Length: 77
Image (cartoon, rainbow, N blue to C red; front, side, top):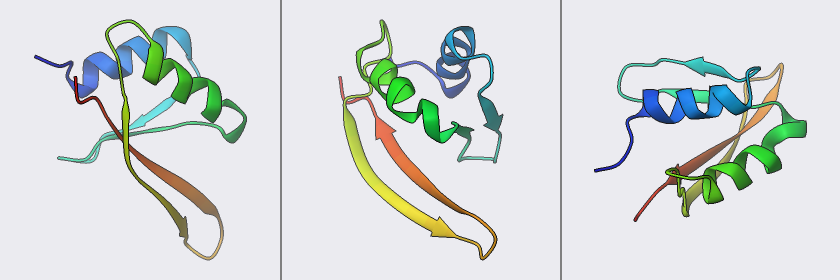
């Protein structure tokens, strides 16, 4: 059985203490600074027990005052 979101977040928090979690019911997510996105994604893909090996979608969003990118990552192991 895979890790829960809280378990994944705890593992990320150990390595990247400046990450911020947003707990939306049914769809929690983690905010990653742009300069850390490549490093965090590489860790999610190859980190022990994580194995996020599938990127289902990348979306750009603009709310008029700021822009951001949403990565939908999954582990299909």
